[in-house]
Length: 63
Image 1 (cartoon, rainbow, N blue to C red):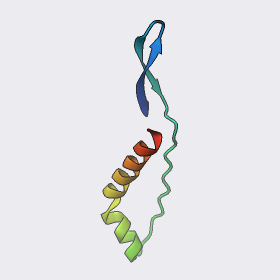
Image 2: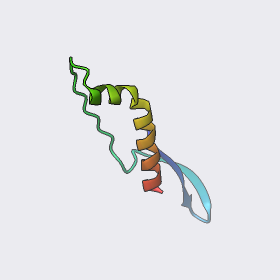
Image 3: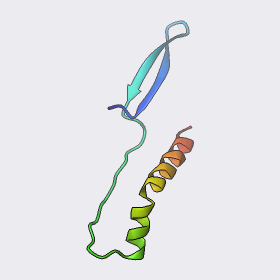
């Protein structure tokens, strides 16, 4: 699945769609823990917000 989509100019101002793997790489390391420490619970409870914030920041950086 492409991570990047856009258009490029071909010939005399004609545009065509283009796809690519994007200019970034997403890496996630997961460490399983039997203890629910404060930090682990904080990450678990806010994981969707963290991913959304990182995605928004990445979009700003790429533009």
